[in-house]
Image 1 (cartoon, one colour):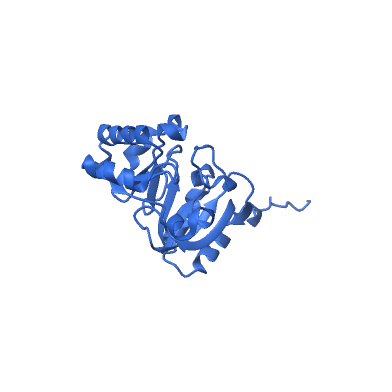
Image 2 (cartoon, rainbow, N blue to C red; image 1 turned 90 degrees about the vertical axis):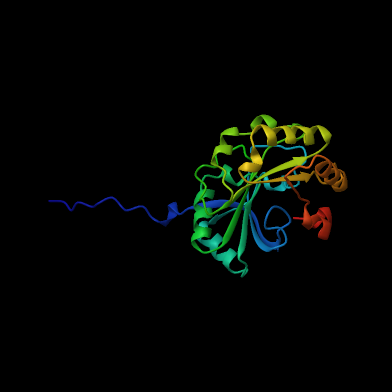
Length: 227
């Protein structure tokens, strides 16, 4: 009788990989962990085209890396905080695996996401910093409002504001959806479009229970190096 050879088991060629634009060490410039030395993992690709985007170089290209190699590289920086960003990191489905692995490794992990993709499967240990796109972004129609139900006090909502109309819209959405009852709400001026002082005065005048934020890294290193 001829020898029966069993089908080969799946090999490591199917290992989990992500397309990475860059991994670098800097200060966190935004959100709740602003100022902390942080490792940034920037994934390639984004389905949105916001008018104020400052990372258009991440839309295409990048290099495939295994999740094992990414976690190892992150560990090599010796920092506690890790930010997974893009582009839109959730446009790569295996981002969910990376987030879980980073949490398992003991890092304090945040995720910067556009709010246009389902966040319900993101590891709950991750602090999700989720945008709500304003009218001037030209991507307001991409807001996935169902995501609001998944947010907890561990998460954050960010509005990037270009002008007074954006501010008024953000105020209306904050009130309509009781956003400050869900998590921290961040109002951020679009760099070079809305003056920080102007936004600060609007927030104080209206007694808003929101956090003013600025892109700290750009104040330190300028627009070219700010990341």
